Image (tube, rainbow, N blue to C red; front, side, top):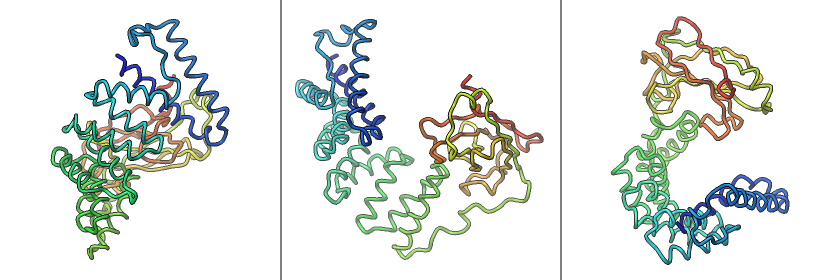
Length: 339
């Protein structure tokens, strides 16, 4: 119970540190005051209406700062070093405090306790690289990444980090081979940024860039073209202050499949309401074409970041399944689910 209470407090502090980072940099004193007030209010409210004894039988005061939470978690892990999640959380806290060597050592304990947990092994490998003065993946980190990929060949972070390690070691051809399978599983924006990295690795290895056949060949005009009409829910638009530079992504994807779109278009918020036509020319990957599918799921996403990868705070329409070829336009309303 003790380590649970400490971890809960530390998670709250880490979350506040992340959320308040912009305010902290601009106005540190108000940010600190706000964080302290919020933490105090949380603990007081829980003490009034919750059951603190269920979490902390000894009724000890919860740590109010990250340093205090880390100190208590360190002490608890000294008493019971078999806490995998405790070591993992401690590693994250050390990394937040810019203590990469301590983070590496904490992740090493978590990795030893959970040798078959792929995510922990990848985090351990990353921590080893961050602790290196030159940010290099050493032999132990590379071995951990290879073990993960033997168990889970589609683990994206393991594949990405292994490619970086191979580039660092001067094996550009191996890096390109490691990265290329990612193009079939990542979203459109990530694929667009990854392709230049792959081509650079191929060029360093004396290989040609990815062939033109992998850049989506156009289908016959109108083949399974899908017309989509997108609008904002009026009540949502009146309640929410929208950024003028926000973007709208209109996405068609395989139902029940990976989140990678089979067709996607990006438009400016100022164009709303809008009508787009999705076809094979809008496909980010040649391995999956709209014209090859009998059914798709269509959504519209309002993105403040302008990133095709879904971010926290993005708002989506309700998904609509459509049989292809579609005879009628698909109508999507963003924000209707918020009513």
